[in-house]
Length: 114
Image (cartoon, rainbow, N blue to C red; front, side, top):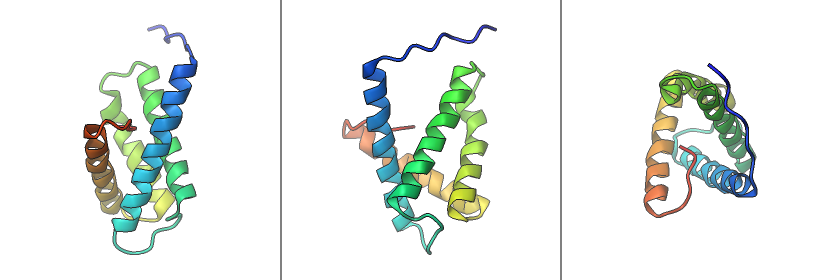
């Protein structure tokens, strides 16, 4: 299966930057809600986590893997686990809250990562 050509436009770059920043803020808010003090519980850690998540999901989709989002989920959970020093269940709970907040933000018409 051929790998799709990579076409980068100014619009795609702007869309990526906006969704990355919005996702980083969502992750930061979720970390403040999640009980306890996590490692890297700051905006920098949240932005780095959002960037890593975007890279993982984009790579899985770019490779044309069937069910790419589902296959990328364990990698995303591992990133959350390692970045914030939480358990697998904690990472799953954080991911769930990020998803809920992202849906809410999306309903408001603001771009989101997921």
